[in-house]
Length: 108
Image 1: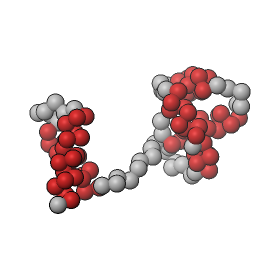
Image 2 (image 1 turned 90 degrees about the vertical axis):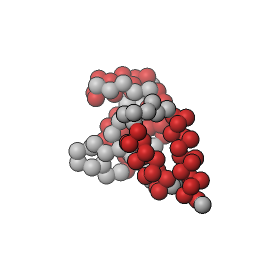
Image 3 (image 1 turned 135 degrees about the horizontal axis):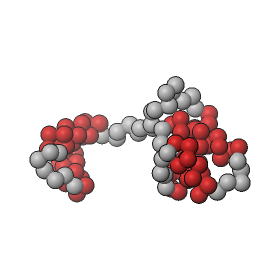
Image 4 (image 1 turned 135 degrees about the vertical axis):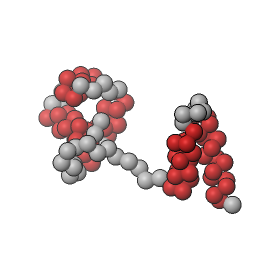
């Protein structure tokens, strides 16, 4: 969900106090043609004050992104991923292994 969609969800929930999270899942589905989980609804509503007070970009397409704790490592692993994604079956385990190797190499 985009920031704009999350803001609209929070506003809808605020204006319709009696609705359940399941009702909100259905509303999201009808309004935005999206399938979301109850967890997504719950996490969005936990941050409703943040979404309702925030200025959302005009096209509403942005999503929240956390800053990387280790940007150098992330860059190396991402470039490795791009180079190998078509010739190697990259699994989560393989990515974690590469991250650990890269982290150790960058720290020494």
